[in-house]
Image (cartoon, rainbow, N blue to C red; front, side, top):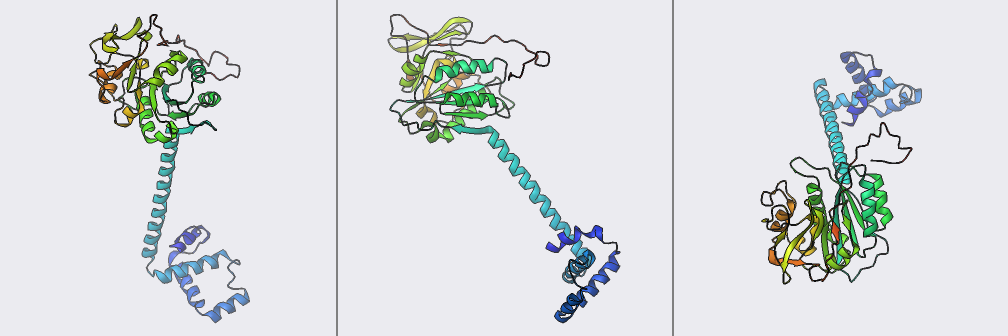
Length: 364
């Protein structure tokens, strides 16, 4: 089949008809069959491969025809040969595209160099994010908080097909161990962030050792990029969670405070404005989960949550096998209680970059 490639690629140089070409090729093959004749022709310059393209390809065709006397056979053979090449090329293209897709999904993981194992519990922060004009301002504020926290790994999931370089640079400047993933929401997920948290949980389960860095104990916290966080939330609450920790959240659900109803250190109900009959009527910012609980389950944020009246917190905690008796309340044993996390929202403005000059600055 190696001759098919050479002959087919050169047929445009030959103007001989098929029967005439076959006869010429057969004569050339017969003439060159003898070693003495081949040497004589070469000595006379009549069989110099570089002397004539016609002689070279006639000889190649002769060898092909000597193996396949019927012209239909070699045509069929060459067709099959080229078909195999086409299939191979298509396979290579598909593999490259798949690799690119995987590469864009899990773009990179950066672990701070020289970081030693800490006796403190490892905090794993999961943050969905998406393009908007205020995103870099929100994430800068959040990054400034997280840089004060020891032994923390930040997983950021971009709702898009590719990473945003400006976000990557922001993460690198924090010098925190972090993972930046691009995962565009797939059809069927009702709200922004659900699919990204699912991707993060799956990635965490598949890369536990790299993310925990040998920590004896780790805790997972879902932190939106536009909330406001006190460093004490991480150091005093999250790091001390045994199974599931829970606390009050400010400025959420149309009220000043949402919180669990705690009696004698036990959660007995919920002080919330919306659907307090939910089994876990808490905001995403109001709880953290031990990594062991997550690793012992396959629970993720699904495409729907009828049990939670459309809120994902109840479904996730129920799917993890959590009972209300497992909840560990924080911040309720103080004489003057303090909020350490607020469900703040940056005011949304509409900007037209086609009209407004950005003067060379990057704006989403």
